[in-house]
Length: 63
Image (cartoon, rainbow, N blue to C red; front, side, top):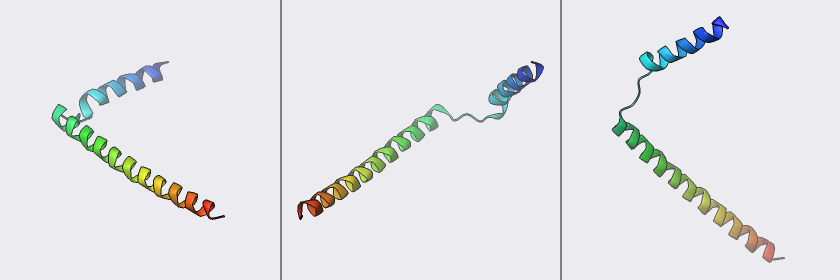
């Protein structure tokens, strides 16, 4: 039981003293960057899906 308590106390100390937390403005900028990147990736994957679906539909309709 002592090992678990030491682990939790060590984790709290490390999170409080050793971790460098970003400033709020930096966090906002990173969040916007991730949002934009996710939207671009979703648009690319959606376009690829549309092209493949259209291509396969055209191919199967030929028979």
